[in-house]
Structure formats: structure tokens, C-alpha cells
Length: 135
Image (cartoon, rainbow, N blue to C red; front, side, top):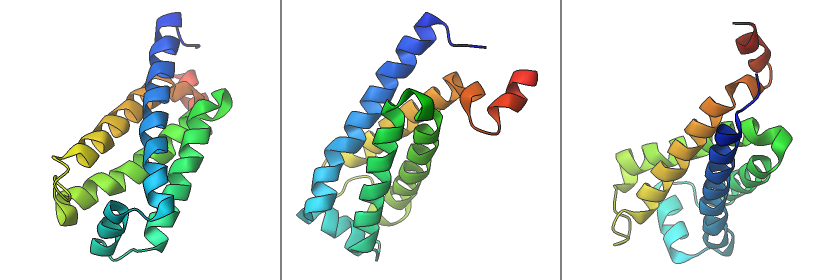
């Protein structure tokens, strides 16, 4: 079963939104911005956690924007941002360095967008999609 034109448009809009959110944070992670260093120091993961999560997010952006790997990008995004959300809820708090909760809100937005993309494209998930198509 293929996506309807509306589903395809919604999926691509969400893919681009999620990719933009992930991409804009890469500058801060890769340049060692004060906020990023603060976050990963508080998590006990500076610098490798910061750099590693940046690499994972860059890979997710590329996967989300390539038609054949969208579902893999959505899955990777869910994993990375799931970790970020849990970190906010357990160690960092919703507001980090007086950001008004912006980082947390962006993580929730991108996580939700990726989840919707994955639901829309569930039949394209490697190894699982074929089984879903039989049902």
C-alpha cells in the first residue's frame, strides 16, 4: 500500500521540519557552544556525548531527507530525541540555562513529527514493513 498524495505531503512537511530542527542544533554541538557543553557536562557525557549525539543527528537528517531511508531516519530521531527528552525530565529540567523550555519543546516537536512520519510510512520500515503489508 502506498501513501495517498495527502499523506505523502504531510510526511514530507514533517520530515523537513524535523530535519531543520535537528540540523540547527548541530552548529552548537559541533562548535562546543556554552549551552551544549553545559548540558553534556551535567549529563556526564562531555565531549563525546555531545559529539556523538551530533553525529547521530546529522545521520538522521540525511536519512530523513532521502526517500528510501525516511523510516530509518525517523527511527534514529526517535531514539536520539527520546534520550534527550528523558534527560530533560530526569537531570536537566524543562528549562535549561534560561531558555524558557525551548530546547525541550523542540525535542518534543521533532519527536512527535518523527513518530507521525513513522506511522504514515510504517509499511516502509525495513524487515517489519513486509509483515505489516501482509495483514
